[in-house]
Length: 312
Image (cartoon, rainbow, N blue to C red; front, top):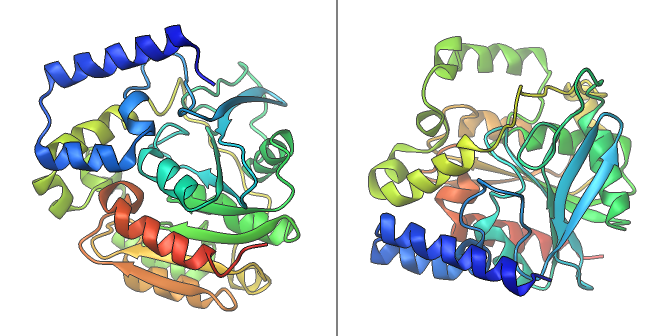
């Protein structure tokens, strides 16, 4: 639970940000819907701070210390896996919504992301092992995984290696660590190196959102600016996620695609879902690569509709 001093400092910072950057009525309504997280944890420029009501979790793993937070509670746990452009600080629109739905909600920053420094010269290890280390530290026996973009590279590995731990997984706007040759060829054709040279917001936020929500774009860019600390850490997978590996997954899976996603177009996301036995598919039209941020109400609704059928 927050101390009074921490609360006052954060609220003061938030009020200053309002004064320096006026918000539209639409943005204020969206912020209220996302409260209490977004109203207080407004900028990740200082020390990492968990959302109100959540406890901070620090997990020591070989070569790093991982920062995260956990709402606690008796509901089924959801562990959130962030994109390469994010950290555990990005889930402003999901935290309150998932808690209201009765779930225990947790997240962590991967190695080298906001709040999770790595030791100089240390081995990077495997992201799937870090997920399990975090889950163990939080006493999460079985849990749902909700992963977006690069976070979705890790979730299928968890489903392959630790099937008894994963209740279900949601893979949103992600290439899913795809190693199937035909899929890699198509992704390479549609995602040339020049795509990576574009500003992150252009790559990962759809044009409809960028045109209609300048305040939201600015907030996303602020989170992206502070997402990576030092050199970017690239952890090697333990599983080659080709068609044969995906076919072994028994975990109930929902794949969410954005209709305007430049990095994982919806038709390829649908075909990826078809490679997972029983995989479901949902499309969010006019949405780019950051569905959790661009269309949070639709994103949350799809996730919760799916999870309601997958309780323990």
